[in-house]
Image (cartoon, rainbow, N blue to C red; front, side, top):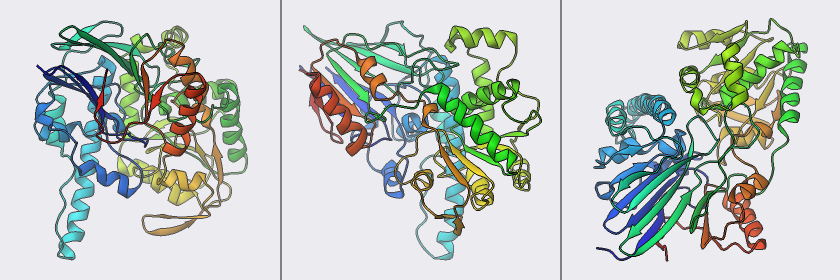
Length: 467
């Protein structure tokens, strides 16, 4: 028996995406998340690089939530030999099915296009990161769903308790109790944390006592604008753009953000904050499917939203149109003004949003409204940072539309909310992950040091003894 316990970070180490963490206790190894790297092409190339561990040696995987940067490499993990169970909440399991199948389909399509080009150039053909068969194989590994607050035995010597993270539907922080002989340690993984006081979901459960905490730091350097101010700004963006005859284009993350924006647009129409007959398009098959999943999981909702759901459907409005088919999406681009268009992806690196940007960025009457995080290297970040021209599908597009950045809708906790979640329990060490190194991580590290809390920023694959 190995006498020691180790933790190592295999993604989101001094960067935002690719969350993947390995815990070893005695003879057993458990993985927490196995996400995809997103952002620049260099970052995305890391998705095909070695994991830093043998997938065959991992006994179980715990999934905190269904965002692609936390679950996207699971099909590859299974293809390379992982045979253990995957533990997640019921809502996460349902959303992961949508996310993984959609990602695999897109990767197959991208690989097919690249193959045609490679053959014309007589170059080697790169296979997709994962196929639909890989995704289906991965989904077979999901075990019986885990409820919040219910300790479960993962493997001998490792017990897990899922706590509501308030980030997206079904999201969890995970407390592990590690026992190896006479030695016992506790390590808490924050997952991604939501902001308290938001509609739809309950507030994050505060961090319990734990020897070690692995903590996200996405917004470790700043707080968000207040939610009421952000909602008012959204209504201002919609109303002013429609009055000028333009379209409102909202790059939307399919999980949580799309549903939250729909909820506020529903309220805005009820309050007559903009024209009641405004057509609103949700042009994202994945977001449409995710909205259906939301309706099936009232156990995740806060009391206020659960009550609203019993009185009617807060995700609907008179002129809301769901666009699943490609032909329906293409038809939207013939609308020169007067519509609200929500489409994925939120970071604008793929999906249908790029087509809508191509047709609206150059229009000075239109507006592009960003309501979520934009990672370095993404098209969204370039636009938010003030680029005057951007390339979309190889075409040089002028940025004449008005750009709105409303960060109060972020599904991530802000700096003070992160500190409040961590609380005042004594910790042996806090490991900061999932953040921009020079912004979120370093700033949050300074804030924790001022409170006398020891921290460490793990390097990729760095073995850390939990002593």
